[in-house]
Length: 81
Image (cartoon, rainbow, N blue to C red; front, side, top):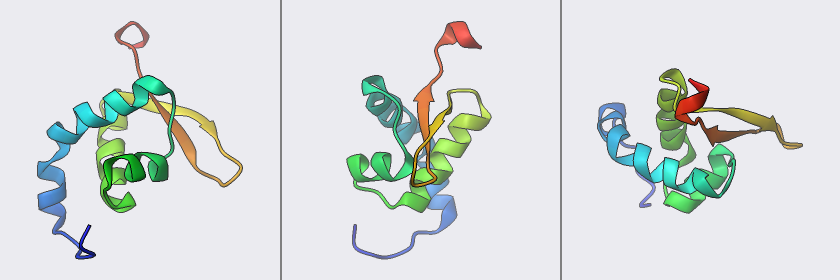
């Protein structure tokens, strides 16, 4: 990333595109926001918006709390809804 902070509207517009990428990453197991951000090469604050949107709509949920204080998020199976 070039270090610039994007307008929040730009970040939110990418939510549908990033949802599929995030769900694909979570196939390997639960990940924290920083782990997802590194894998996507995106800033953590942007990933937080996308993951929290996915959480709101039941696509991901918290799995465990790490020693560093981060939650690991996992994909929610359709059967769990």
